[in-house]
Every structure is written in C-alpha cells, then in structure tokens.
Length: 255
Ligand SMILES: Cc1cc2nc3c(=O)[nH]c(=O)nc-3n(C[C@H](O)[C@H](O)[C@H](O)COP(=O)(O)O)c2cc1C
Image (cartoon, rainbow, N blue to C red; front, side, top):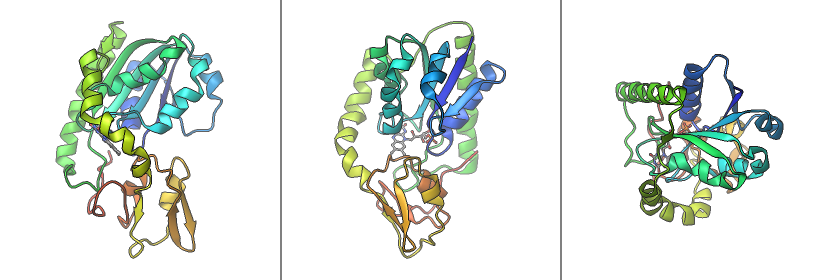
C-alpha cells in the first residue's frame, strides 16, 4: 500500500511525531514537509492513503496547512486519510479538522490522532516551559500513545479522536470561537527587540511563509505571520515575541 505522509511543523514536534509514527508503521515511509517544493498533486494522486500532520493553534489547524489542503483538494478525491495533530494539552477536535476540510473531496477518514508534546509558546508566562526532565516524561508518554495508535492502524481499527460531536463543540466553544476572529490582529503581533537583535538573519531564513525581511540591519515583519513560533524559538538572542507580553527568557526544548 502506497502511503504518503505530509506535515507542517513550526518547531519540530509534528515532524518528530509523524516520523516516529511512520517509521513504526512501515519501512522507508514516504514523508514530506509541505514546505518542500514538490508536485503535490501528482504525489497525492499516486498514493493510496495520505497522513496529514499539523500542530494545533487555538484549537485550529494552522492556516498554512488549511491553505495547502484547499489548494490540493481535487487531488485528494476519494483518498483514505489519516490525521495526526500535535498539541500541548487540549484541542477538542484538532485531529478531526483536516478531515472536515477534506470532506468536499469525499475522503474516507480512517484515523484521527492527538499527540501531546512539550509546548512551544515560549513567550507566554501562563504556559510555563517545562524542564528537560519534565519534557522527557511528556515525550515518553507520547511514544506510548504513538505505539498504541500504530497498533490500532495496523489492526485496521478506526481511530476517531477529535471527530465526535462533543469534541467539535469543545474545540469551537473553548478556543476557536475566540481565536479565529483575532487571527488578523495576531498576525500583526510579531515584535522585535531592536536593542538585542543582532541581525543574524536566522529568523528570516527559517520563516515558512517568508514573512520576515532584513532591511538596514533590522528584521521587519510583513504582518503575514502564521504564528508557528519557529523564529521565537530559534532566535539566539531571544529578541522576538508574538502573543506574549514579554520577550522569552527560555525557549522550547527540542529533542
Ligand atoms: C499560536 C499557538 C497556539 C497554540 N494553541 C494550542 C492549543 O489550542 N491547544 C494546545 O494543546 N496546544 C496549543 N499550542 C501548542 C502547539 O500545538 C504544540 O506545541 C505543537 O506540538 C507544536 O508543534 P510543532 O512543533 O510541530 O510546531 C499552540 C501553539 C501555538 C504556537
């Protein structure tokens, strides 16, 4: 069976989860980040089934992944779909979202999965970043969950995490209803600490949507931020914040 794995990962959690899941499920899995320049219509059409991996932002699917699904909707026609959403704590229906977006393509969603991994929002005090040891425990728990999901998929059993009515209601009422209307405002929230920035260009080079530009030794945002937090967590001087009030003092732990 030709299975294709496509993911978007802002800071590495989803990449880790998709690669771990895929390598446990089969030998030499065909995995791609949607940031790669590829002929996706052909890739998707030639696959029997497609796994879609993405992080959760405010109980929602990242706009970069939503736009990708919409752009390639016709290639997904009648495909068998698996989804894998990574999150810090809770999303309600995060795993179901890609299935809902692909519904017009008459897809068959056989598995939707949630994996909790260390939080990446390092500029928000409320979400205290875990220590390396605490993060290690979260990873170990995630590994056990991935093993369980692999067993279920191998056994051909449906996995419906985030696709039941109450999950959808919780995802919407607890977060999406408030997060979505402010999306445009949040896209403009990207802030640079001009005093500490060393204009190294790491953020510019790594932004998945080329939102950042280096001009006269200053990084400028074009207000198209997709909130992935990659730049915040890569900045060697912790000079970037997005949704938080203060610049981060610690960064996300990478495995
Ligand atoms: C803007 C933003 C919003 C987030 N919202 C949620 C959320 O609603 N629920 C949750 O459990 N985690 C939330 N998270 C945490 C991420 O989903 C989590 O850290 C994810 O694993 C990151 O994946 P990545 O490293 O592949 O980008 C949010 C992260 C960001 C950056």
